[in-house]
Every structure is written in structure tokens, then in C-alpha cells.
Amino acid sequence: MERCSRALTESVPVTDMSLLYTCEVGGEAKMQRGGACTEEGFKHLRRILVPLEEGGGERMLQEYDAFEKENRGHGAGATVQCGDVELDVEEGLQEALGGNVSLVLDDLNPCHSRYRFKSTGAVHPEVLGPAGHHFATTHHLGSISYKKQEGQCSGRLASIINASLGLWGMQWSDPVRTFRGMYWYPPYGFTEWHTDGGHVNGWRIYLSNIDVEHQSFFVHKKGEGSVAIPDRHFQANMFQVIPGQPLWHAVGSLSAQRVSVGIAISKKLAEKIIARIPPSELLARVGTRPAPSLAEEVERHGVSVGGIGGRGGDGEW
Image (cartoon, rainbow, N blue to C red; front, side, top):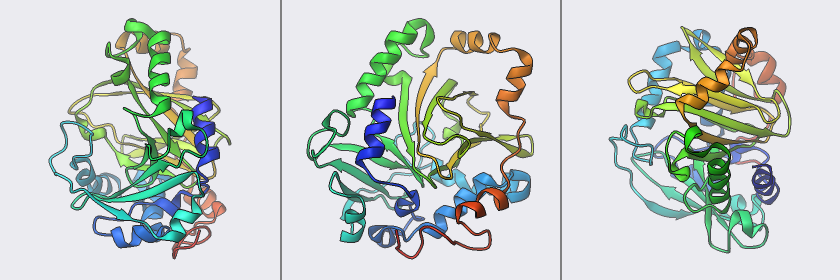
């Protein structure tokens, strides 16, 4: 995991994810310029950082239902068929990413569009693949997903999961299916509030590799409010997803480079892990810390509460 994440962050110079934020449906012309969806993206990042009880609560969360209905490979919850038109991005955006990657914009209208990353073959072919290989895609509205089925690292990670957990520890016997993906959150990266469509089930564990502690967060709904769990080096976040009982959760990064690997683990393994954690420690780990203050965290990192300030915005990167 560490080798793969290091190769990604070294090869693709994304130090401010707002450059690659996804616009609302129909904003493809803005996405071609890069950095033009900053205001929309920071709106979603704010919603993650502000406690739900202060930011609109359940009514706000329902606005994200539409995204989960888009047929983007998320499973049975999808009801909206997406288009597929390939568009070129402007030279400024391509140049900002350096010579190790070429970028393509997929117009998926009536769904949210996305960027695809292709290797130029210049560096780390063991991770990015040969020239022309599609190795990553923007994930949801503000993060990057390493290609699961054909990514060079994905196969190795699935093999490691199989060797480490075996049939007893994996939710499914197929390690490729058990491996849920590798997700990259550069600074200001996020995955907006979502529930995975409510169509998946079982226990999930996400292992995070970060360069700066406490500058990225896993956030989940709890009662009428929300709880943010700050990341530490090689932290594991574990939770259960149950059909018909949506678990609203989100991820955000302020200044950290965060790469996480998801694994679908068996109920037996989940119960064994929980049993080995003392009750007092378990309470601390499942989240009693309130979500970070918007004023303290966001403004300190150059994003004003009243509007978009600091890094990103108006096509600048």
C-alpha cells in the first residue's frame, strides 16, 4: 500500500484537489478549464466539516440521493443511465499535472462527469502502467479512485489481502471482489456525504496512509449530528453497512495526502477485532470527538466561511 500510494503522489503532482473538482451536472465546459468548480467543491467540503446539526441535517443529506442513483458502477441502487462522451481538457490543466499523466474528461450527462488519468509511461509503470493505460478516475465529486480491475497495484493488493486474511477473514471468496478499492485524497480532497446506495452489506475496513496526522477525517452521521474521526498514520476505520439502514458518511482532507484501501471483511473477523479492543478504548475509537469547527479548521487552511478564498478558484492553480 505504501509503495503504491507513494508512487501515485510522486508521479501525479496534485497538491490541491480543487483543481480537479467535479462540477454539477452540465458543468463540463468549466471542468475542461480546471479549477473552475472550486466554489461548488468547497460547498461540499464545508458540509463535511460542519456538524450536521448546524449544517442542515437530514434535509441537506437528501440532496445527495440523486448522485447515488447514477449508474456509475455502484450496484443495484443505480436507476439513472449515464452518457459517455470523451472531451479534451485545456492545455493549462494538462500542463498543471506535469508530463507523467494525460487527462481526459468524460461527459456523462445526465450524470456527474469525471476525469480519467492515463499514464504516459514516463515513470512508475509498475503502478501507473504503460503509456496510454487508464490507471485512475476522479471519484464522486472531489477525490481520485485508482482503477480497481486493471490497475497494476490493485492485483497485488488483492493478492496480499487473500494471503493475509484467507477465506475466513474475507467477506467473499474472491479477493478481487473483497478488495474494495484504493482512494486518493490530496489536500482539499473529499468524498461527499453518501451511503453507498444502501444496496451493499457487510463489514468494511479502510486502511489509511497519510503524510500528516489529524489533517484528514472520516465523518459519519450519529443521531441528529455527526462525528469526525481524525486520521493517524496507518489508521483503520471499520464500520458495518446494512441494506435498508443507510449509513451516511464522508471523507475530507485539509492539508494531508491521504490514500485509503478498502477491504470487505467477514463478520467473524469483525467480531474478533471488536472483541480485542477494551470497551473504554472502543468508545474512543468509534467517535466521541465532535466534527472540527469550520472556523478553526477551514479558515485556517485558506478557505473563507463566507465565500471561497485562499487556494483555488477562478481557474487558478
